[in-house]
Image (cartoon, rainbow, N blue to C red):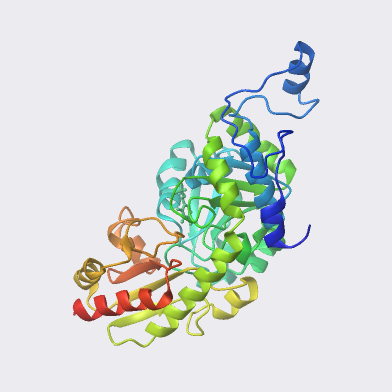
Length: 388
Ligand SMILES: *Cc1c(COP(=O)(O)O)cnc(C)c1O
């Protein structure tokens, strides 16, 4: 099959039990027919499920679908997005290696690079994406990886994936792209030369705020190296969560269409609103990298940011006045969600670090859900009025 929507629905590992919906395999291990078969499977002479820490039919189901969607050969499903970020770096780098990363990153990824990996002698430098031309000056003789997030969380910065693919190739770097915000439906980094694509499947892939999950996808050769690491360190996705996420893939395309449509309507409606300093959304012409967003994304995504006038206190008053939209740190849910990054997801960054990536005290991240857009508009508008 060839279309995204069809593959996401029809690719399915089948048992011989004739079930229509995928079965759930709650089994920690799998039975061998003989001592010889056990030997051959461990020796990887024949493929098959051995133990659910290594593989399980439900995680294989999910991986098959997401690989088809991303245009990658192989993948690994992990227990959370952070397990995927950690695994993709820890499996491929070693003491003394250096990472060049885009400055605007998910809060925990930032902590990984600045506080966790340095303990093992893996260091990082951040590049400002408005200054690409000078990134070769940030390279060190030991730079091995280019780690990017686009659109970034929560700054919604867009990085030119075509440029990134060429830059990584020219300097022999492993290019890793966290594709959580765009999902494979809106953008496929492997097409532009990313060696690994990572996901927090917790977000849009689940899409209903139920389970955690992560994915590491790429060429088979590289994934085999990552697999060695995950197989022996154990961040495996549970079969139940894999089953949920595989089912969710079936509706990703229609959900994303509506998330994007709603988000764009909300962004357009509030642009120029007197209570706001700024509305940022990749598909608004006022977005700094609008042309780039149009070039590499099918639509603008489901996230926008609003910068309220009046800083922290106004931002908090606004959030407290909301009646429908939930206050919770998740995103990509069918329910609209607000987050105040400076005091929550990015509070561990220093004020100076937040400043550099544009996380001001008035910045509010809005993950636009699948409710009717007029109800979302109304909740935001009334709360802006009441928070004056
Ligand atoms: C949420 C998120 C992660 C981490 O994923 P978890 O599933 O919460 O561990 C990583 N990157 C981005 C961009 C995210 O939004």
